[in-house]
Picture (tube, rainbow, N blue to C red):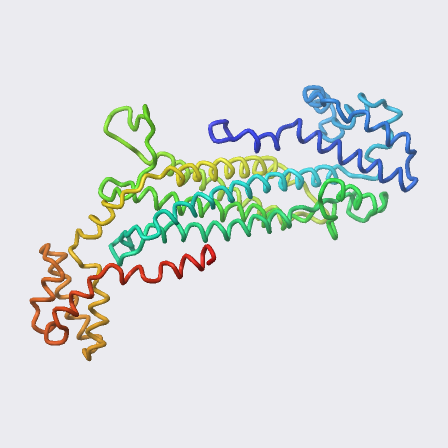
Length: 434
């Protein structure tokens, strides 16, 4: 990703320096295990650790790869330059390149997952704080974009909290599934390397040995990982879309924080645009776009082909860097979101009580009117509000067929806003605990 949409900690996971350091640790730990098993001399294993504090020369590795056309061989050649050709002759004993590449990739993905999990925890904290703040802030609920019935801004935040909490569980599951390593040789049979080497390397690097691999770790694990990132990105867009709607001039129930000195348009000085949430919508599209290639990587020829490699070299960094940035940006948006409770009430009252139609409908049926008859009575009065700007309650009070069944006091009671918030605490207890 370009620096504009990147954060340093996540970017560092995918740097060449980090990659080569992980490759080195895999090889060094494998040497330790092989020395312990008596496969290679302990002196040679110890010699490999001479590079422990050495900064690998990325330019030199690239220079070697330009000749060898093989990145792992280029790295091993450079490592031998550091520790000595004779001392390094047992490095990579019985291993294949994918043992290093796949184990490293999964380490990078687990580290990325740790950052994403922390990002999600920060977002959840912001959503919870705003939910509590606006627990009883009344706003109109909408279905199909049309006024439906009253809800609260707190319930809106709580709904997003619950969704992101599910995503936190998904991220933790995805991390656990991807945290495997394989040091199993050319086709995964351990023909030239003891399975105990794999066990040792994985233990030292915080991974679980892959139960059965070919030349590569099975790609269904990676497909599940990137699919999870796609789901999280969609949830980011879900929140962003709601905020974008609320910031529309005709709605203006909330808006992104507009900082001092900020400009909204090069042409129109009055503009305050939802640029951050529009940006999040675009970033979500990018992350989701990386899911399909990950799914297509699952099917490889026989014990392995290389078709997955170019895909993963792109989507590994791009998907994680993008989602990390998006989660951090969304947290900031939620944390600083400016909410306008008065505008929420004004919007709800634009159609003068119309949103209480269901309560009147139910009251009529409970009073003995058929559902079809009750619907017709309520709808004919509601249409006067839509078409003529009338007051819904006044129309009901003036309708003799309605007042023949419901008293004025009973009609009045149906316009009590408190009726719609009586179970807010119950819902909050379900979402946040008692």
